[in-house]
Image 1: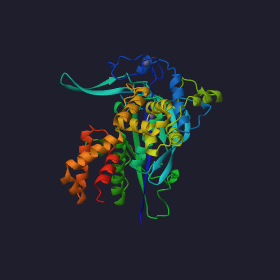
Image 2 (image 1 turned 120 degrees about the vertical axis):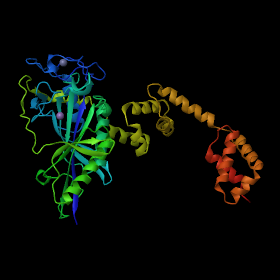
Image 3 (image 1 turned 135 degrees about the vertical axis):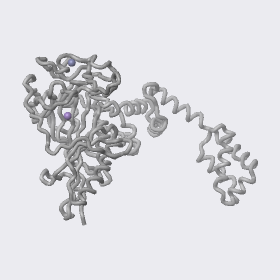
Image 4 (image 1 turned 90 degrees about the vertical axis):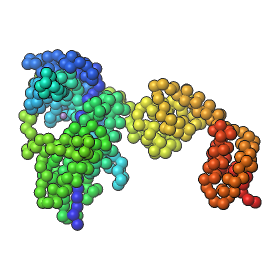
Length: 455
Ligand code: ZN
Ligand code: MN
């Protein structure tokens, strides 16, 4: 029997929401600003301009690394990564090569087979590039460059190739983006490009089942396939899942013919749910990395790292577990209530006001889609108390109404007694109509059954 093992790693870029850019004082909020209105000699890459690192961006990058269980070295530096592209005017990107701000972390995800650890290779700091705009000017097709995004702080997160399916990749990314939002360091909005996802995929086929299995998820480097395909332009978690599953099938078909898939970069076409070849790269690109001579290495004391660590709020998984323990919520409800910090804080503020009503408050927040900016916890608690009063009917009134509905509808009652279940629904509806929607359905059913049951 053949064994099939998809090998997937992820590269994620997250734009930080600092006020200013990574190496200059220009505004980093590039959304909707007129083209090239937020630039200076540094972020335009003019000769002689000197970069000065943004302290907050560096600290946020370290914070994310720590939240993902990475180690932060005492020394880190920036490097130049050289390549040519019109949106990169300097001819190099300031990034990090061999001494990133943090490395060696992990993130646990839930899979069908149970909890699985995805190792994180590194979390490093770099700068974003400008943006190309394709347009038609005076009848000519042209490409314009907008440098407002050039130099915006970018954190790159790289995983080890421990992911085995599109589903797992999606699970990982959802957890990662939740952590990023909890830390409040980025919108992590994929539709605006402030979070960008690039899976790399290859598939291993082995004739001897002993060699590989699905649990064998931390594959040694020398056992990895001899090629990999990178997919770009993916702007949702659902599309990542689709692109990966599409690629796995495509590779399998090629491998089964005894061939090796081409090492290349592919783009995802949303309308077709398919990937298409963009450019082939037979060998790994040589970026001629060298240390950035204009920025001295960064040094971090233990106290500084401890101070940054102390700013990390209670993270989603820990909060979820606490909600289950402390409030007796189900796993599912706790997961929904800890989806974002606002919702979780709102829930806890309500509980403080009304300790006895945990279940009701949780249900109310989950089912009614509360707008947290417009409703206060006080208002919500008042609404809950009110709605309970309103839906209460005294038992005498309830049983009187049931009696009346039963005597008014002898035909329906006999239908029900002859086994027509729908007849019961009609009777409940009549009772509810008379009580203008009040009354507990369960209680009404019990009463009707009690009254019409043949003795
Ligand atoms: Zn600038
Ligand atoms: Mn990068």
